[in-house]
Length: 331
Image 1 (tube, rainbow, N blue to C red):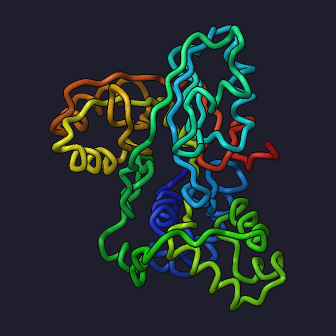
Image 2 (tube, rainbow, N blue to C red):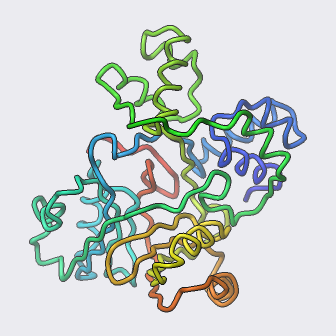
């Protein structure tokens, strides 16, 4: 179980994933050595990973949310085969073991029935499937991601961690090329890989590494995320909420929901329910409290459905193996 120092380090990393340990320590009143030691202990234990991610839009891909209803006795092998695919993210088994929920990276003009059925599931395991477009993620710096484990950053601490605000993307994404592969591979393994190490793996100078990172980051092509394993932190209930919100207040409601500390992700989707939210709580009573207090105060939510996760399979850039976050192998 993590303590108050670990919580503050995690909060700092969620706000500024590549902030130096010296700055993280100063902001939270601990030494640089303590900040580094606590981070490395959390990473080695498989509780968290900082990862560098390339926006799928760089490759002309959109994100689609799939709900696959399966025969419970056949769901395991099908879910495992989906999880190994590189175009699949955020995969889990829900609804008592009869539903797979996952995010697919696929071109916007792809035929929806081709995304999965082309390779898999005309098998008897699949009973029904729906695929909807993730239209817009509700993400703001400092509020995105699950923070229900605790800790708190003051506005002054956030300002120190942020430094100079990043410039808004000035144009289209800068697409990575073949020469970027070692750079991106190292950041996918550890989003905090130093410029010195990145220079070693790419064969570039540190100056060239810094310039290329700045180019990819400022265009929005490259970003950083933190994968967390809430179960290891004492939070054992994970649910996907399917909400219906009036379009006139969709933006306001979406950002309000995304700002809840219990919410790991919220986004606007196509389909009968136009908002998807992933919620993490300690237990059923904690989840009930969230529904009847936090969510109940959000204006415009007039219907909802719930899928309770029973097995977490894949995060943004991590597999869950033996209760630890690990980097996926080849697809």
